Length: 201
Image (cartoon, rainbow, N blue to C red):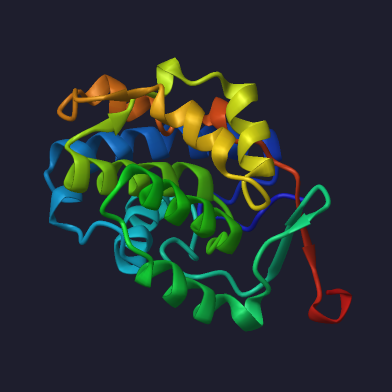
C-alpha cells in the first residue's frame, strides 16, 4: 500500500523514486546551507528537524514522531505508547566516545521515530554527533550494504558487529559533500514495514 503523500502518487515505485530524488536534493541543501551545523547534535529535536528538511515536500508527517506501531520482519520497533519515553531515554544517553555514539544510534534505530525515512535521517544524525564529538564521520562508501543491514538487525542484541563495521569506515573528511551524501543513499535501507494495532503487540 502506497503511503499518503503530497505528490498524490499512488504507485509505490513512483513514490520511492520521487522520494529519493527530492530527499537527495534537500540533503544537499541541508549540508550546503550550514543549517545542519546549527542543530544540537544527539538531540531528538535535531533528528526531527533533519527528517522535516528531507521529507517536507513529500509527506505531511515530516519531522513528526509516528502515531502507528511499526515492525520490520520479525522485529517490532518501540510501541507508540512508549515511544516518547524511549526518545527521552535515547537523548539522555552519553555521546562522548565512539562506542557511546554508536550505542545511542542503535537505540534510536530501535525507537524508529518516523513512519518513513528513519534510516537516512538517523545516519545524518549519527554523522552530526561524530563530527561534533570526534571530528570524524562515516565514509559510507566503505560500508558494505549487506554487512551493515545484517549488523543493524542484530544490533539490539549485540552491537559489537555494527561498531566494528562503522569504526573501520571512519574518516576525518568532515567537510566532504560526497562522503556525506553516501549516508542517504537509498541502497542502505530497505522497505518492508508492517503497521499493526496496539492490541497486536
